[in-house]
Length: 105
Image (tube, rainbow, N blue to C red; front, top):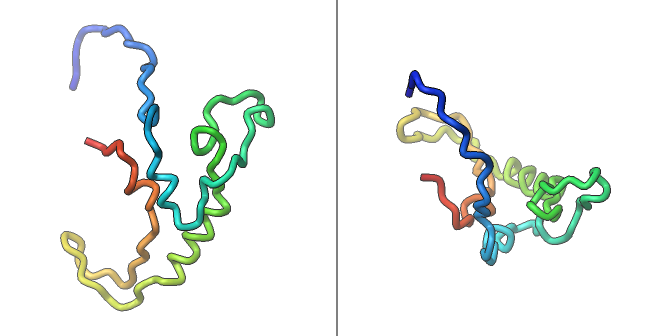
């Protein structure tokens, strides 16, 4: 949308989508990638936005699941709706994303 008027910024939002949530996204991880604090704000110059919101996300642990998913690749040609024929399909875990209570609109 194009407007010929300068609109002022509303500024940052104080909305926190995880406030009060029991975080089913973390509980569903098959590798427990959110199981312990891996990053500390002090180690990163006092950053307040850490992986997993509080420093509890381990990329290396998540990578193990992704490697496992790649080993289980479906290597037979498969018909995919609205795409055509896929030579192979890798079904990545995505349990954290799929179990988040905040869904995109």
